[in-house]
Length: 302
Image 1: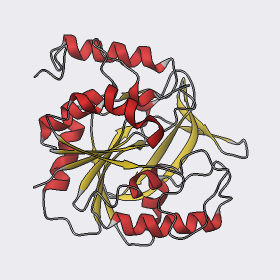
Image 2 (image 1 turned 45 degrees about the vertical axis):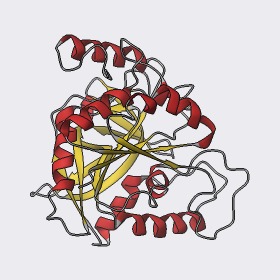
Image 3 (image 1 turned 180 degrees about the vertical axis):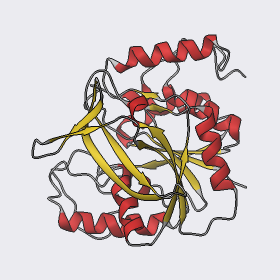
Image 4 (image 1 turned 30 degrees about the vertical axis):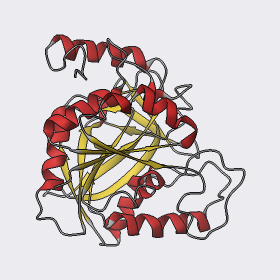
C-alpha cells in the first residue's frame, strides 16, 4: 500500500531572500526537508512527491532529493504559472505562484491515494508525522473525511517578523468548524496580534490552534481544488499577488458541508525558516535534537 507524503517546495522565499527549501541547517549540510523525510520514512511513508519549479529542478535534485532516492520512492510535480488553468487564459505578467491550494492541485496526476501534505521549510516533529500517517492509513475514512495536525499558536511564531497562520475554531469533538488565514501575525508580550489589510490590529492570546499545513487528504480534494482555483481566477485580479490558500479552500468545504476535517493536536515542537534570521534558530534546534540522539550526525548513510 502506498503511503504518500506531498512536500510543498515551490515557494520563492521572498521574505527569506532565496530558496530556503534548499538551504542547509544541519551539521553536514542537511536541509529541513532532509529531517522531515527522514522522520517520514521512520513512521512508514514509502513515497514522497515534491512540488517544485522547473527553474531550480536540477539544483533541488542535486542538493536535496538525490540523497534519499535509494531509501524511498520519489516523484515530482511542478507548480508553474500555467498549470491547471482549466482552459482559462494564461496570465503573462504573473510571476508569483498561485498559493498552497494551487501547489497541491498540480500534483493531481501523480497521486491517486489518501496522502499527507507538509511544507518544505517547516520542521514538524516525528510524532506529528506519525499522527497524520495513522489517519491516512486507517482505511475507514470516506472520500469527504480529511484531517489536520494542529499546533499551539505561541509555539509557531518567528522572533524576526510577521507570519501567516490558519487560525482554527473546533467543536467539542475536535472537528474543524472554521479556519481563517490570518496574515501579518506577530509575537507580542501577551501572546500575538494580527493586522488586517485595512490596518486594524487584533489581539490573540497565543493558545489558539493553528494550521501549519500538515494535512491528511482524500484524493477527492483535487476536484474541490480545481473548482475553487477556477473560481479564484475568475474572481481575482489574476495579475496581482493574490493566492489560493489551502485554509481558505478547507474553510469553504466545511461551511458548504462538503467535507469534515478532524483536528489532531500535537505537542511536538515546531520551527521553520520564514526570515533569514530564522536559519540560525533552526540550526540550533537541529543541533540540540542531534545531541539528544533523535538524529544521527549524517542522515543518509549507505
